[in-house]
Image (tube, rainbow, N blue to C red; front, side, top):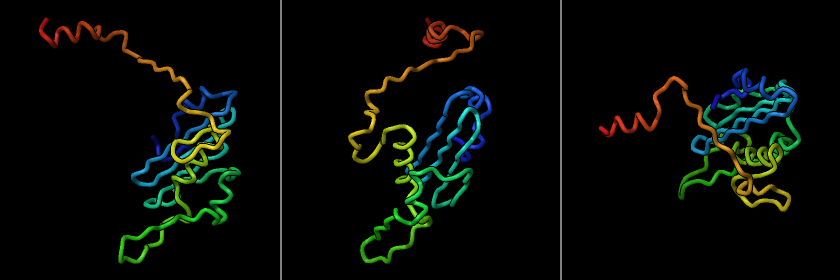
Length: 150
């Protein structure tokens, strides 16, 4: 995933013409969140941030679900180790908490936490997978047989 949603490859943005396209990415190890929203191929909102890098990208007006975070109403909780003073979190809110709210607002479901009654059951959504092969490449079965010495 690109750190900057605004740098999403042009062929993906062009393919979304006439529609709304959403990019949503989170990485829990580094508390990173990135999301972008395009309307008819035009970027209207992009945000990428983590406590280690700060705000990497912030394009467009914040969306309604972001308001309590920027207003300081959803401060990050810091739980210190026993007998240690807590160090303040590097951002005013936790990116992964905003990420779950972004996922709900933009896609209708969450991954972690307790779903709301109106949330989509993400497990009930069928996904199609596609494998693209090089038409000039050897047949995978023939390649497998050659590797096994048959």
